[in-house]
Image (cartoon, rainbow, N blue to C red; front, side, top):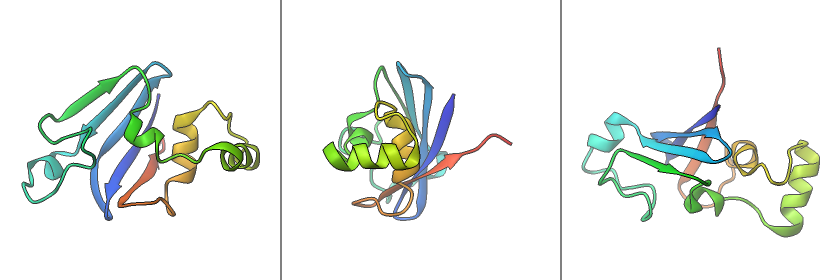
Length: 109
Protein backbone atom coordinates (compact mmCIF):
# COMPACT_ATOMS: atom_id res chain seq x y z
CA UNK A 1 0.00 0.00 0.00
CA UNK A 2 1.24 3.48 -0.87
CA UNK A 3 -0.25 6.83 0.07
CA UNK A 4 0.25 10.53 -0.47
CA UNK A 5 -1.18 13.73 0.91
CA UNK A 6 -2.95 15.98 -1.55
CA UNK A 7 -2.55 19.74 -1.16
CA UNK A 8 -4.52 22.53 -2.81
CA UNK A 9 -2.69 25.87 -2.74
CA UNK A 10 -0.51 24.55 0.08
CA UNK A 11 -3.44 23.43 2.26
CA UNK A 12 -3.92 19.75 3.04
CA UNK A 13 -7.04 18.69 1.15
CA UNK A 14 -6.93 14.92 1.57
CA UNK A 15 -5.10 11.66 0.98
CA UNK A 16 -4.79 9.43 -2.03
CA UNK A 17 -4.09 5.76 -1.34
CA UNK A 18 -3.18 2.92 -3.66
CA UNK A 19 -4.38 -0.27 -1.95
CA UNK A 20 -3.17 -2.22 -4.99
CA UNK A 21 -3.00 -1.50 -8.73
CA UNK A 22 -6.76 -2.07 -9.01
CA UNK A 23 -7.99 -0.13 -5.97
CA UNK A 24 -7.47 3.56 -5.23
CA UNK A 25 -9.09 5.70 -2.55
CA UNK A 26 -9.23 9.48 -2.29
CA UNK A 27 -10.41 10.86 1.05
CA UNK A 28 -10.91 14.51 1.93
CA UNK A 29 -9.22 15.70 5.12
CA UNK A 30 -11.82 16.37 7.85
CA UNK A 31 -10.90 20.05 8.29
CA UNK A 32 -10.83 20.68 4.55
CA UNK A 33 -14.10 18.85 3.96
CA UNK A 34 -15.93 20.74 6.72
CA UNK A 35 -14.68 24.19 5.64
CA UNK A 36 -17.42 25.52 3.34
CA UNK A 37 -15.01 28.11 1.94
CA UNK A 38 -12.63 25.46 0.57
CA UNK A 39 -13.51 24.27 -2.94
CA UNK A 40 -13.39 20.70 -4.18
CA UNK A 41 -10.01 19.76 -5.62
CA UNK A 42 -11.73 18.75 -8.87
CA UNK A 43 -15.14 18.79 -10.49
CA UNK A 44 -14.89 15.00 -10.65
CA UNK A 45 -14.21 14.77 -6.88
CA UNK A 46 -16.86 17.10 -5.41
CA UNK A 47 -17.11 17.71 -1.68
CA UNK A 48 -20.53 16.05 -1.66
CA UNK A 49 -18.93 12.92 -0.25
CA UNK A 50 -15.87 12.44 1.90
CA UNK A 51 -14.36 9.33 0.30
CA UNK A 52 -14.08 8.07 -3.28
CA UNK A 53 -12.93 4.66 -4.50
CA UNK A 54 -11.87 3.60 -7.99
CA UNK A 55 -10.48 0.57 -9.82
CA UNK A 56 -7.96 2.86 -11.58
CA UNK A 57 -6.08 6.03 -10.75
CA UNK A 58 -8.65 8.83 -10.73
CA UNK A 59 -8.60 10.73 -14.06
CA UNK A 60 -7.92 14.02 -12.26
CA UNK A 61 -4.66 12.65 -10.86
CA UNK A 62 -3.77 10.67 -14.00
CA UNK A 63 -4.02 13.88 -16.03
CA UNK A 64 -1.36 15.48 -13.81
CA UNK A 65 1.19 13.09 -15.34
CA UNK A 66 3.43 13.85 -18.28
CA UNK A 67 2.81 12.10 -21.58
CA UNK A 68 4.86 10.65 -24.40
CA UNK A 69 8.58 11.38 -24.52
CA UNK A 70 8.51 13.34 -21.26
CA UNK A 71 7.00 10.37 -19.40
CA UNK A 72 9.57 8.00 -20.89
CA UNK A 73 12.36 10.34 -19.84
CA UNK A 74 10.99 10.76 -16.31
CA UNK A 75 10.53 6.99 -15.97
CA UNK A 76 14.08 6.31 -17.08
CA UNK A 77 15.69 9.02 -14.95
CA UNK A 78 13.66 8.22 -11.83
CA UNK A 79 13.85 4.45 -12.41
CA UNK A 80 10.09 4.06 -12.14
CA UNK A 81 8.10 1.73 -14.38
CA UNK A 82 6.29 3.82 -16.99
CA UNK A 83 3.07 1.93 -16.15
CA UNK A 84 3.37 2.84 -12.45
CA UNK A 85 1.14 5.89 -12.60
CA UNK A 86 0.90 6.24 -8.83
CA UNK A 87 4.69 6.10 -8.43
CA UNK A 88 5.22 8.66 -11.18
CA UNK A 89 2.64 10.96 -9.59
CA UNK A 90 4.38 10.70 -6.21
CA UNK A 91 7.74 11.49 -7.79
CA UNK A 92 6.76 14.29 -10.19
CA UNK A 93 3.81 16.22 -8.72
CA UNK A 94 5.44 17.49 -5.53
CA UNK A 95 6.69 20.87 -6.68
CA UNK A 96 6.18 21.90 -10.28
CA UNK A 97 2.66 20.68 -10.89
CA UNK A 98 0.45 22.68 -13.21
CA UNK A 99 -2.46 24.12 -11.26
CA UNK A 100 -3.21 24.39 -7.56
CA UNK A 101 -2.79 20.73 -6.58
CA UNK A 102 0.48 19.17 -5.37
CA UNK A 103 1.27 15.94 -3.57
CA UNK A 104 3.53 14.78 -0.74
CA UNK A 105 4.34 11.07 -0.32
CA UNK A 106 3.49 9.57 3.06
CA UNK A 107 6.41 7.44 4.17
CA UNK A 108 6.12 4.60 6.65
CA UNK A 109 7.78 5.35 9.97
